[in-house]
Length: 181
Ligand SMILES: CC(C)(COP(=O)(O)OP(=O)(O)OC[C@H]1O[C@@H](n2cnc3c(N)ncnc32)[C@H](O)[C@@H]1OP(=O)(O)O)[C@@H](O)C(=O)NCCC(=O)NCCS
Image 1 (cartoon, rainbow, N blue to C red):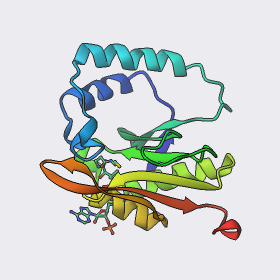
Image 2 (cartoon, rainbow, N blue to C red; image 1 turned 120 degrees about the vertical axis):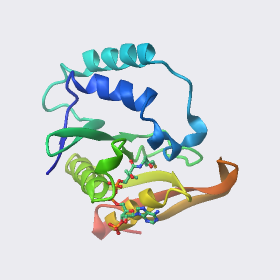
Image 3 (tube, rainbow, N blue to C red; image 1 turned 45 degrees about the horizontal axis):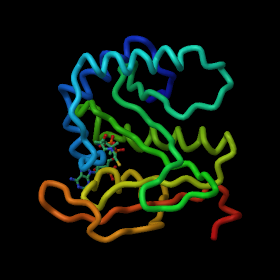
Image 4 (tube, protein in one colour; image 1 turned 30 degrees about the vertical axis):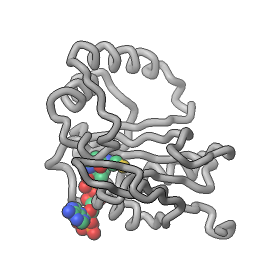
């Protein structure tokens, strides 16, 4: 069963591992952005983050949830407003997802977790969401397709990954079907 939940203290060490040791997921999530880090820096950063969010009121809107698969922490979903290369004056949320635990991928976790998060955003007033990826990320593109996203913007050859050029892609999903344009 897939559950979205708030961060708990024991997640900190998962983040330290995902950002310093088991980093294969970064080869797919904006690999042109990766920065050097250390376990100490990650532990400090994630501990500070946890201290900041742990007292959030129950009804405060969330921008990030942890993904749990049958009780195991396997990744996260999040939303942001600052898109790359796309103006977003209406502050339409863009959603992102990472499942660093490789053995949890490929069996529907990504689609189900992102789908649940989009439902959450819809329940909190979103009428459209974006997601941004690149043309080499076939798994993310398939997840987006399964959830009903359609192409919104494309910048040809913007990304270079492992020596090859790829298109930067933004997809959109209209949630209020009566208002679709
Ligand atoms: C992208 C990601 C979140 C998807 O999660 P997931 O649990 O693997 O997703 P799902 O199992 O729901 O769906 C994956 C789909 O991709 C398909 N797929 C997997 N490998 C593929 C490949 N090499 N070529 C084409 N399709 C592929 C799967 O078959 C599945 O489609 P299906 O249900 O039609 O069979 C996850 O793979 C991940 O975290 N990857 C690394 C980080 C990343 O890329 N994050 C997104 C950044 S934009």
